[in-house]
Length: 219
Image (cartoon, rainbow, N blue to C red; front, side, top):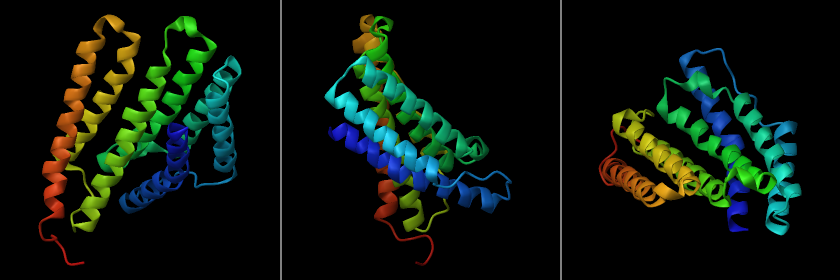
């Protein structure tokens, strides 16, 4: 239930934050693409997401699986409406889209396991997509951006920021794959943990230092 609550919160808040920051960057750089703002489609999708997650918690049946897969497709469409591909030159904006991508991936994996258990996709794969992936990357994306903004730095990830994003993404990807490859589970788990630790160590060193040093620009 706690995981479902976090997914709903990110779906709600991300639905405002991601297209807003994307629009700001696209406008600033003079690009013509614009994300579709929060509208009726998003409201319906949030309602469907709530129902799908409730069914998953209560039933864990093929019916819940179908609802999760349908919801997953809805979030893939939502993500496409935000025109993330246009932000490729800016890692600090693109990472928001990559982070949100874990939401439909996670819901889809949970649903497929309930519908087609013979595929060998375990519930753990979907859960880790939503935790290590979605709940790992989205906070990092927001924290790096907020730290840069509040300390007077330019809103650019730089080499270290981009490396942090890549490490978290790799950690999450490996963690999701690990349950599907039981023969390699422990080495994959160790590799995922190593990447995760490296990412947050870099974050603490780079962005933590910014928070305890004078601003580059006046407030």
